Length: 167
Image 1: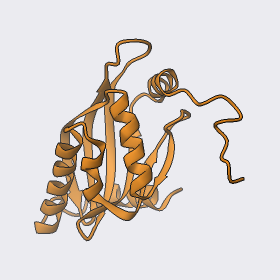
Image 2 (image 1 turned 90 degrees about the horizontal axis):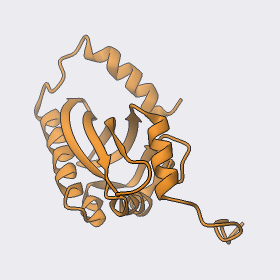
Image 3 (image 1 turned 180 degrees about the vertical axis):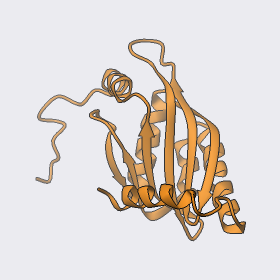
Image 4 (image 1 turned 45 degrees about the horizontal axis):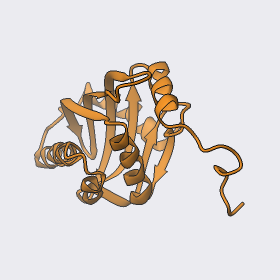
């Protein structure tokens, strides 16, 4: 279990005993995530870079070419570049904060015009430190739809070209 997932379980328990959105720090953290979504909505993957800590880890679940941990701003922005290529959009619906965690629920969809499409609800749990996103964990409602969409629209290069050169 990742550190963020462990903290998520603890955070869920703490929500029942502690008020969420209880202070100025939580309000600033929610605003940071709202601003991140506004930057994402521009369609320019570079617009999200200012929100990312240098040691960010962004976790994408699934069994598809874009799944896995993205480490550092370069990998995260490259992931968002891939989403932009797939005309992926996000519509925030809900935000909640407690301490350095912000959870959002958003609708994510793409309409590339051919093959499997995607339209579902996602939850993202963000860890904020020093005004930057240091961790993000993505949770989705339909893993099968997600995997089918990404495999259809983000094929891997054929072997041996997709293997790293520095083995």
